[in-house]
Length: 145
Image 1 (tube, rainbow, N blue to C red):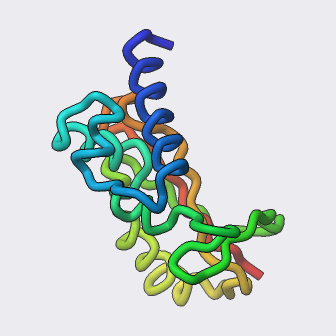
Image 2: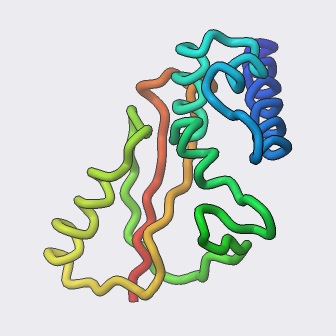
């Protein structure tokens, strides 16, 4: 692993640690980008590319007091085994909504398959800056009966 990649990862980890410790404080883009020692514009692009969501959305989803985020309980769990339809998205993986819509709206009805009672989930396979942005890869899994 290159020194530059290790440096980026360390910066992003500092940001995640800072967010976790300051959920009740000021977590605007200026404050958080300073923790990573990036300009706010570069930081915003890098954070979104690395984690697949904006800093603002990450903070919204972060568990606040007693494992809650936005009034909803967050619990660790296990993804149950079983058959899944898998759609690989290569390139811009910042917004996977169109890929999810394709699976539910187009592929599922045409396939004759039936969705299991478990939500669609995603695995980010490769990330920018580890690979060029056009080679970033994410797999969407649609659990099937």
